[in-house]
Length: 183
Ligand SMILES: Nc1nc2c(c(=O)[nH]1)N(C=O)[C@@H](CNc1ccc(C(=O)N[C@@H](CCC(=O)O)C(=O)O)cc1)CN2
Ligand SMILES: Nc1ncnc2c1ncn2[C@@H]1O[C@H](COP(=O)(O)OP(=O)(O)OP(=O)(O)O)[C@@H](O)[C@H]1O
Figure 1 (cartoon, rainbow, N blue to C red):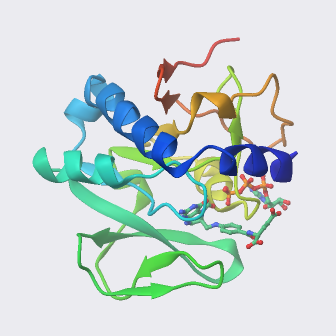
Figure 2: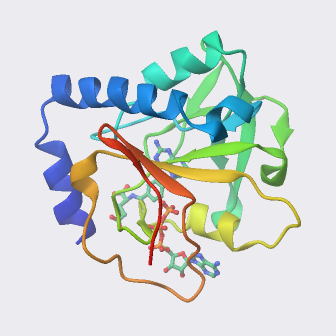
C-alpha cells in the first residue's frame, strides 16, 4: 500500500506538486495553529513528497523559528534548529539533516508539519515506514505540539491500517483545505 501510494504521488507532475504546495501554504497560513506557533518543526522534502519550500518562505516572513528532524540510533529522532543555508549532511535515506545545531525537545515545539504517504479522515497516517514520528507521538507529555500532516488531497485513503501505538494527527493540510479528523 505504501509503495502504491508513493507511486501515485510520484505521477503528479513536479509543477502540479509545486502549485499544490503553494495552495497548502495559503491554507495553513489561515489556521489558528499557525498564527499562534513560534517554534515550528518542518521537514525538507525529498523525492515525490509535497514540497515545503513555500511553507519555509512563509515561516521566515512570519518570524517563526524552524526545526528539522535528524534521525539517530534506535529509531530516535530529534528536532534541530534550522535556517536556509545551514550546514547539512545527507543521512542514510538520502534526506538532508542539520549537521550541528541546537536541539529543541519536541514537546517544546508549538507545531510540527508531518510528512506522510497516506492519511484517512480520522487523522491516522501512513508514514515513510521508519516509525520515527510514531515513536515521538507515542510519548506522553503534559503539553504536546499541534501535529499537522502535509499532503496532497489525493493522498487520502479510506482507512489507514492502525497499529496499537498510533496517534491521530490534529489535522492534515492539503491544497484543498484542512482535513480535521472526525470519527
Ligand atoms: N523529508 C522527510 N524527512 C524525514 C522523514 C520523511 O518522511 N520525510 N522522516 C519520517 O519518518 C524521517 C526519516 N524517515 C525515514 C524512514 C524510513 C525511510 C525508509 O526506510 N525508506 C525506505 C523504504 C521503506 C519502506 O517503504 O518500507 C527506503 O529508503 O527505501 C526513510 C526515511 C525524518 N525525516
Ligand atoms: N511507539 C512505538 N513503539 C514501538 N515500536 C514502534 C512504535 N512506533 C513505531 N514502531 C516501530 O516502527 C516500525 C515502523 O512503523 P510504521 O510503519 O508505522 O512507520 P511510519 O509511521 O510509516 O514511519 P515514519 O513515522 O518514520 O514516517 C514498526 O514496525 C514498529 O515496530
